Length: 210
Image (tube, rainbow, N blue to C red; front, side, top):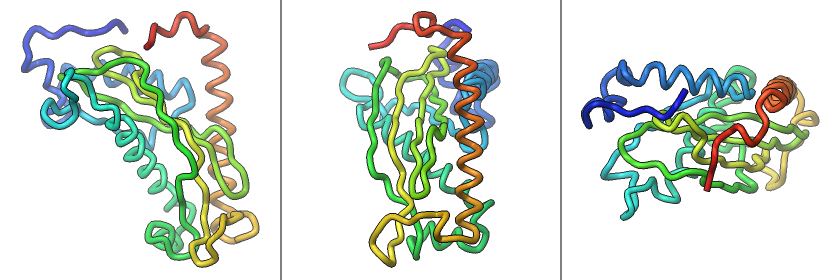
């Protein structure tokens, strides 16, 4: 889908309306479909509607630290998805009692400027899983541009706060083994979908960037 123009400013900011705005519905559906084809996780996706007074720098672009903020919010939703597998241990993870999570490293590449009015779809894809950590890619798409505008990557470590060291989920046993198996399968499926999509979409056809 090509970049979209609206007739009025009010239409262009209608993503703020209850339900996300009818005019933005096909734009939203297009990006979600694209993200799913690339192996991103639908259950933990989020949307951030750009707020003109809060999100922009003096040049009218989303602030540099805005994109990492959006990525962190989406990754928190990924942590919340662990509840299904951790059961009664989930609140311990969220409140850093025993085994929890910690960000080891994170990078953010800004691919294209984004200005108000616009709304951003943010989605995670787990790329690699080890016994004590996983690597995640978090990509952000502009609904109006219909293109990726930023991408964050990094390692998340499972950390035993009671022992002060990384936690091997397999050795921890119980529900932690279940979580490790689940995210490993998620990564496997994501990588398969990503490889299929990249084979059909050479880099030169994916749009220019900064």
